[in-house]
Length: 359
Image (cartoon, rainbow, N blue to C red; front, side, top):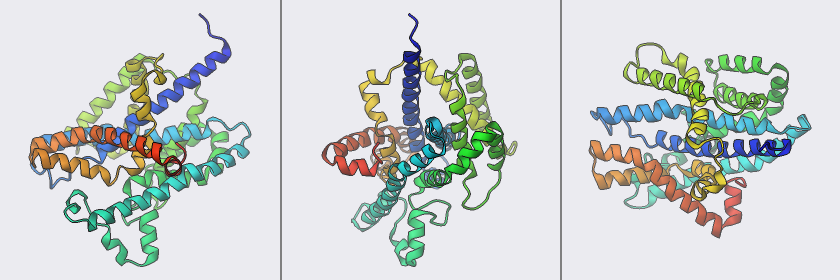
């Protein structure tokens, strides 16, 4: 049966929507793996643990944040029927969907850290205390909470992604005009800028965000199997070589090209594993989990630490205890936080709506 043009468009739109939601869930699990790793002094001498963490968090996980930026850029520039007027409308909307959740997320991190520090017997389940923060001047405290705590990230370090995204959206009229007239030339320029480090200028985030915006113009959204297999093999081989020969070359120069290979692989593997006719709505539990991706991202720190450290307490501070904790805590945390999100949304729907920007 040949679909009518209208149905075909709706089918492609639904395919893209389902794909982006599932890939966002996969990305947040990779982010949880990045933040589930144990410090070198905790797993000192545990070679297997160190290699597993580097490969999963450092090699595979490096695709997670760029994928989030690509998705954000794609959705931001997807529908702009009125040009600059549409861009201004999206900027206003992002105040509620990005800025407000960012402020709440920053305050939650600090508030939760203070609570853990003052409750007897629980401080060992967090990595650092928030109490020294309040010995600084008010201006420094606010800067640390909402912008930069001295390490390039706010106190809620996982929210650096959202901070940089807000900065890009705030200047989006400039990027819209440049992208409209320069297209792929702008992408190439921004790619080169990612190798330049300028304080407070998020070139890395900007490149991936604009790449997502330019991909709106790419008509063929389906990934080819042969290309997927090829890019996946190259991505894995390069990651393995980097894992075992970290000093062979300057791997930082290849960081972004390798990530691009990873993103192409993930995009195509979705079709190969789930199939192009996959419908998210037919899978209840997966649909539910996909609804809480942003909620998990906002509040997974420092709460994730509790889960991973409790597992070690139960299994022991040994090689297998740390390894099992690292491999399982992202999944356990995701299940727990989806349940928390369901209860939060059920009993405090208005508060949940504000905290997550209506997601």
